[in-house]
Amino acid sequence: MVSVPKTYNDLYLEARKRFKAAGISEYNLEARLILSAAAGKTREEFIRDARLYVSSEYEKMVQKLIERRLEGEPVAYITGEWEFYGLPLTITSGVLIPRSDSEVLVDTAIELLRGQGDLRILDLCAGSGCIGLALARSLPSARVVLADISQEALRVCRLNILKNNLTQRVTCVRADVKETPPMLLGNFDMIVCNPPYIPTSDIEKLDVSVKNYEPIEALDGGADGLDFYRCLAKVWRRSLKPGGYLAVECGIGQAQDVVDIITEGGFMHLKTVNDTQGIERVVVGRAV
Image 1: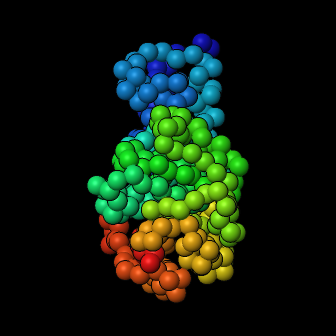
Image 2 (image 1 turned 135 degrees about the vertical axis):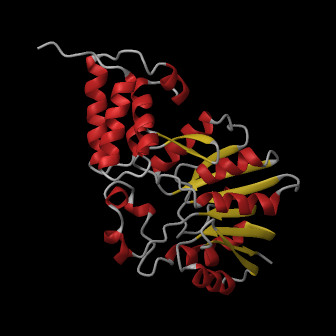
């Protein structure tokens, strides 16, 4: 029996139907992202070519990608791409997938630093580099250092620096938040950080798409989820200029504990910033 050739749109409708049946909330978007990435097309090009017929090889590849998503693998790891704060990013399984929650941290930092002169910003636990790169793009006078302990994260950071044409103002360095800052790192006007903050005992309770696919070392914040905040307050304060800011993202219900930790570390003028759901998502302190 001769198989009937399919178009991009036929495969899109099939993927969309299967994702919807599986309870994937963004079934339209995810189907389009996977099929367009498999075809090497932008979303606009995919829509333009929707009525074109596809090869059997392409159809087989798409079916495999659909199965990966149905097994729980996040679409960002399947496509190797994601967008954050309007920036296109390369994403691998070695880094966390950027969340919209982190845009609150970017907004807060921009509000504090906008209009100032030359700036140095350090993005600790940078992962994909999404936060530091968003700040570099939004603050043209800023020079940004992306720091992470993971060599794979630093590789992804470098790819994303190149992808966003920010090589003149953004660089990478390997650094461990739990250790003394490297001697040559210098001082900064702001340190931003989205550290691991999930309590160890809560890791197994996370959604399959998170606990089985995203790097555990970028999630596990120790017994109470606050280990990295303690290190930031005690160790990294010395890397801030007088009056410099420490701005961190935190999990639900952690804000007051983080405020206490940062206050004990010698920071002043502490404040919290809510996300769009009214959750205290960001804590900011100022070095004196």
